[in-house]
Length: 143
Image (tube, rainbow, N blue to C red; front, top):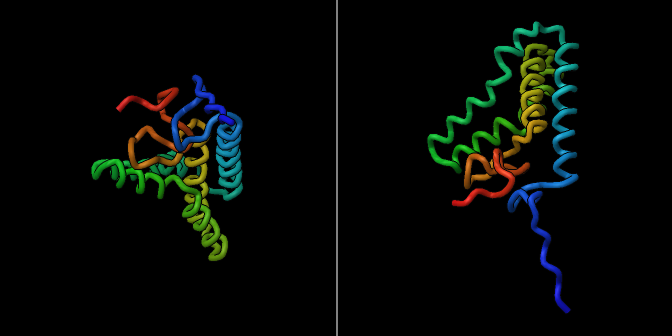
């Protein structure tokens, strides 16, 4: 008995990446995180200028790519995983520190927007290789 080969078509986006309905769900989760974090931020009573000056701060850790793709991916993923900002929301709530909560919510909104737009967590082999697919490519680029 032979097993059928996997179907590879134009929707295949490379090894180690999510595609099809799960990818859509992950992007919808990103949209939910983005909108939810901004609604929570609005409830914090903080000024919206805080969003404007802090929303791109997580992207500063892309400087890690100057040390190579592996180091860059690690630093990028630290800045673009929900663990740290979610923990900061918890600490801020526990300590009644509204400014920390507000900054962490902006951070979560940034992560949610990135996921919505298809920017996922990075693999160490290439800047454009993410868990949501290859950025700017329909399939894995030739190396």
